[in-house]
Image (cartoon, rainbow, N blue to C red; front, side, top):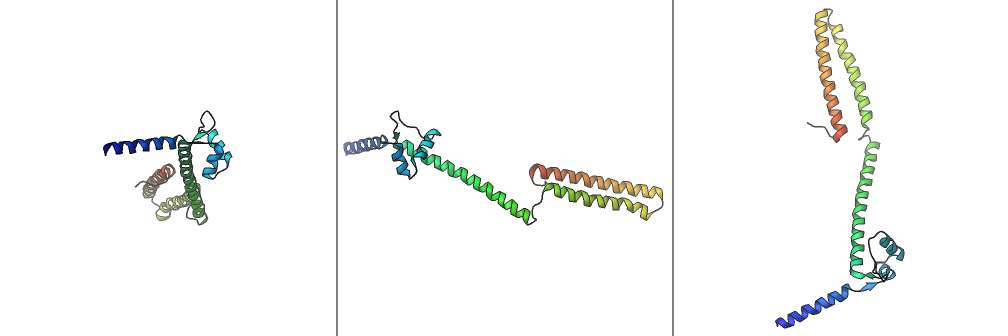
Length: 167
């Protein structure tokens, strides 16, 4: 029984070795995978497949290399498709005014806060004629505006760097 199993294993190894040593021409491989022979020449030029010294290709390693190359190309295509999909989504978001250029956002913020600063700094003069009180209120308003400006600058820098605001 053990001898019979050993003989069966030996025959399988011989069959396996025979299958691996099968070779084919570039045209035969092209026909096998349903491509033009020029594709086989291209894969050879790219170093994906390598012929033997007689110009023929070992069938198994050649097919493995072709399939591995196709799988890698498919993964590259998936990455490209994802990038294109993201670009289209961004264009749609811009068209729908859900996404704006950060420079436009900065310009709006500068305009609104400039107007707010001007209005706030005019309050002390409108409320009191007493110079000491006006001066103190102006300083407090100016300090508050400076803190707000610092915070705004920090948040804008975070957005530019990471695309997100910290908390």
